[in-house]
Image (cartoon, rainbow, N blue to C red):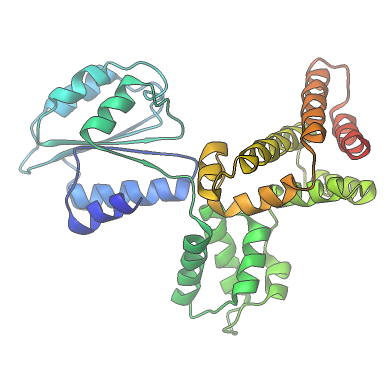
Length: 325
């Protein structure tokens, strides 16, 4: 990401960029910065934006071959094409593209063995955008608050992030709510956060797993019923619970190899800020417990899908059996 920032700052651009990952805010921010830097905000005549799996590759090649109109540059912004997971004719053409053409790809997922991925890596720059580390995330939140003449202590900021999660779009939304709520006061408190901020389901999952680890069946089930009250579907909760257990198990295995938090974040696909929480939970479960729970969760999911078990009861069984295992 630092290299990308440097390109934008110095206005020294590669001809090809690939922005990918699960942080929508960062992908949106940097694609807009690249567009403004490469073309300028007003040059729409030499800008082409396409999105989706049905993009006509031959049409994009034709546009890329076209000389820019009264400009030195033409920009193609291609989003969610799926070309980096499947074969694309664009990979055959990319090495012969005119010097006047620039292409920015934005994707959720990629296959690093893909020919187009390798071509962009050779000829341009690839940035994986999966969130900010804890320090950068806190600095970003503080900067948002400072724009509104608001302050927050580090302890309160940590509480805020634990409650609302690390998704930047969601953080922005929750900050807007806090600023409106505290419009007459300068300092934001934990009580303000409790009053207006919505807790994300990921935060509930951490709390539920903490209750399961401490064998507190009553509290774990109460949290599950709270999620149902918030209209979360049992199958969504089951999927997230299985995923959460799997992430804890992966984290535990990597910790045993003395893997750094940054590398763990990259390998298991979570924000760097969240690794410490997964690591803390990993210490509360044995590897055997986690494996049993994961197998049980998969079996319950299959039983629900085939109609042999009611979804709400299935999640209850997973919680109870994980506690007593």
